[in-house]
Amino acid sequence: MSQAILAITEQLDGSFKNVSFEVISAGKKIAEKTGGPLIAGVMGAGIEAIAGQAVEYGADHILLADHEGLKDGLSDACIQAAAQLIAKSEPAVVLIGATSQGKDIAARLSARLDAPLAMDCVDVRVEGDQVVATRPMYGGKVLAEVSLSGTPAIVAIRPRAVEAVATQGQGEVEKVDINLDGTTLSLVEKHMETGKIELTEADVVVTGGRGMGGDDFAVVEALANVLGGAVGASRSAVDEGWRAVSDQVGQTGKVVAPNLYIACGVSGAIQHLAGMASSRVVVAVNKDPEAPIFSKCDFGIVGDLFDVVPAITAEIEKLKG
Image 1 (cartoon, rainbow, N blue to C red):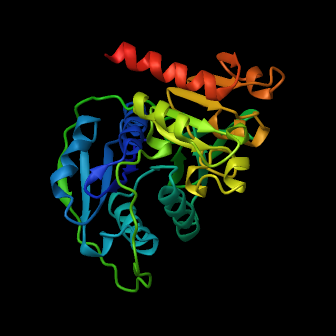
Image 2: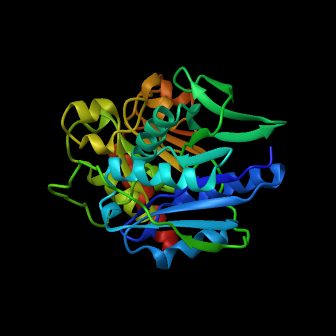
């Protein structure tokens, strides 16, 4: 295998998401083994200034799809642009982040190109001429090795599953003329929550569960704030209406893999564990010593979260001066 590797990046309002650099790094590792060039696909409107950042993570060539029709990140426009980048580069492997947008693009590209797809992967490699992806199955209970036959092999990589490693690439930038005729979706209205860290991008996630007892997440928010992290919620907390669906962590919510995950009043249902199993360090606070979360955490505190969490926050504030 000596064909190109295409890493499709994702940006928001002119800034790359971290998963973009992780995808490029994963592609670099494959390209070094296969001897093919690593190409970064950059899509958006008015994003020429940021395209060069892909060089810092090893991109040998950058295909820039800069088109006003890509400004809002609508799926049908992104699909058309991504398909044209693939036609231009003729890659053996296409890598993309397993974000909400990335999953949509990956699935529709797979159908459009009749190409094999492995979704939500935590690793990808090449063995001989075979692309092999590793992905969790059965709620994270097992890791499956999936072999992809066909070209291009499409792999969607879970955010924070692969380390973004800085390494210099050749970085030639080529602007590609994109045709978006026939796109039908249009943006009616957009509401953005400013200052809020995206769960799947956060280094620290502090989650509140049923043990919160209501919609007052102030103690959890205070801890997340002092740690520079994001606030999550279990499905039970979301079902009660205490937090928005966008905050839900779990099998039916968002899958996170932060360096530090703090579960406050979360019992540890299988579905929730599936959404945070890849966290590097897990801390649990629960007054029930038999809570399943304690069998999955690195550090556990048995106690009332409304006493424990503020005490932790206060100590961190002292350490930070």
